[in-house]
Image (cartoon, rainbow over all chains, first blue to last red; front, side, top):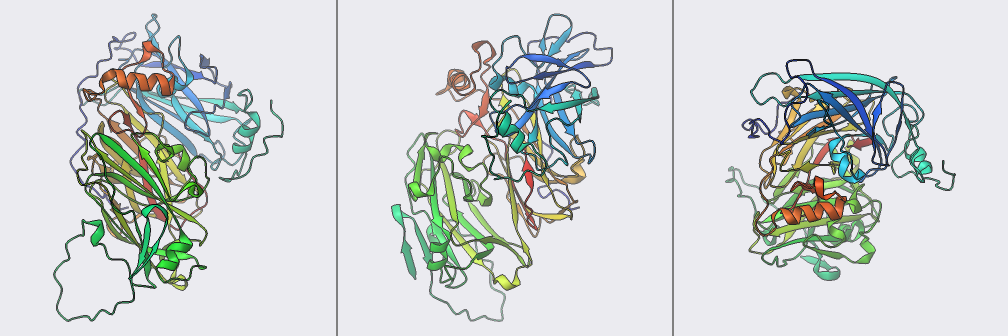
Length: 206
Length: 367
């Protein structure tokens, strides 16, 4: 493999400790912990556990995604890196999205991706937007099939030390359950979908 | 020279055949052409030229215009068979200093930007169909340049980008004459397409374009990094031969890496094939310097880092918050002087990559 085509100096991104107006959540001398969270088309932040269904949502950027967040503790909540990935269990292929977010304290020593009142369109930037459809990648239908969901939460490393991080994996089943959009969802999320393929939206909806 | 006028001041140009008598001494290096009017069209039968003509860019404005060309017309003007596919092998582009970007797309699904609605479709300060990126969401990129405005790229031997006679090509120019960038001399773009004989084509060029629209660079989250990937679904390895990235003035570092399609974290530095630290003049990496193999069913991982800055005083946080509320329905309590996805340099951000590879594949997905 060739080296970088533009061997310029290291990135001039400031490395000062970020300040977001929120103090440490929990006890930073203990290991980071987090729970999975998810937000659907109703914009409500919910808990997500191993074996749960997860709604495929039509996002502003098009296609279908799942919005996965966290509720975390024992962490500096400012500028944490949230990475979400869905893995096809049979082929090991993944779809990934990673972004820097601030966690919102819920008053119990934990902080979440979501806020008590949020619009979906504004919330999406605080959750991992894991893109699943159009399905030109998975060997099976994306909907009604179980996938592996992997989330990594990494603390900002402002002092040059190795950043503290935690990765967890659960299994989830995406569903085309967004009201009024089921037929299109099942079309663009079916196995072997081809970009530009005409969807029969009269095929009924759930 | 022959010139085929089109509507609204566009023109395609072809020159009569020229005979070049070579000499035995090595000629001095030719300085790059920086004036679009000085770019000579390819000789007849070897290609054709697309031109916009000159246009003004008033102070404190951003002009983004979309020009449409039918491949058949271009081929005819260049002395090529108008009923045969065009096999593009070399692209030359020259644009006036000050351009924010120039993108050349192959038209696919028509949404709000219809070639049949006019050969030139004007956009000003964010308004107009030529500013709405959803209109060209599935239009493959042919070539692009940014502020420095020049490109001369010959694909590897045997590699061509094929265009059918009834296809449309869209040339999009974005000139900024404001605080962040200036275009005092107005705008103009000239592009040459040099073709090759179809019988000598051994591989088609593929292009991919990714745009991450869920970005947000805010006062209380001032140094965010966003990462995504594109998979090139191919049973055999492909080769990346071109790359360019695009963000606005809050952008600090834009990296691209080869990716195996199964890893979930940023690839190692050894896999990085592109880096840009200049938002207003990002490098256009291309072959022969860029020649990177990608494993079967692998692809590209991209990563963009930003630094929030105070908005221009003429806008202030009020303008950013107003956009956030109108465009993203963000409640007042969550507004944080955020730069969000959009085309206006002064108050929006972008996170786009352009990658060129061969052989072309049908299934390429980017997020």
